[in-house]
Image (cartoon, rainbow, N blue to C red; front, top):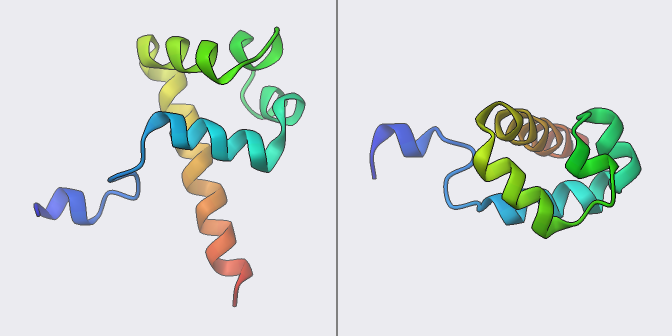
Length: 79
């Protein structure tokens, strides 16, 4: 395994897993407030969100960053 992948917190996690985890954690309304994009605010679904995020790198980066942030908080909440 390369050094880059060892330090990549998203290694092995699909975009669909990320979106599902964020929806479970926040719900669609709060997720739409955290990241103000139409696919989270207007008739949201995992399928439409994945389609948009796969075509829109800036939005995908925001979603991935939020996912990493909640993962970091959960680790510290366990201590």
